[in-house]
Length: 121
Image (cartoon, rainbow, N blue to C red; front, side, top):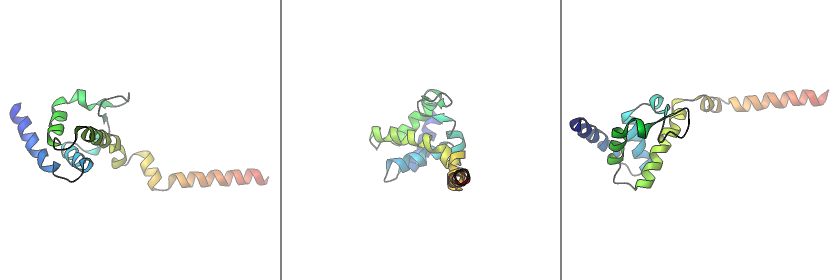
């Protein structure tokens, strides 16, 4: 187990050489899991529909923290939480896809047209 932990830390510590904490955390976490996998987790599990990553995989969380130990702990924790929060958007979640494709604008335009027809009668 210790050998696996050391190998994992070596692998992800190479990715943590960045200028910003957020970028380093994204690189480290992306090397461990895809956005599809990350979207089912939250860092602490406060949301009921998500699995708490800290409780489920404490060894991985410890490796991530060790890889990012050169950064401030508060900013590191925020960056890791941000990675899990943004995973559905990076994956292309429904709201993100609709927003990028103009779905919200189209829906608002349709509502305005319906309202205009109703007001003109």
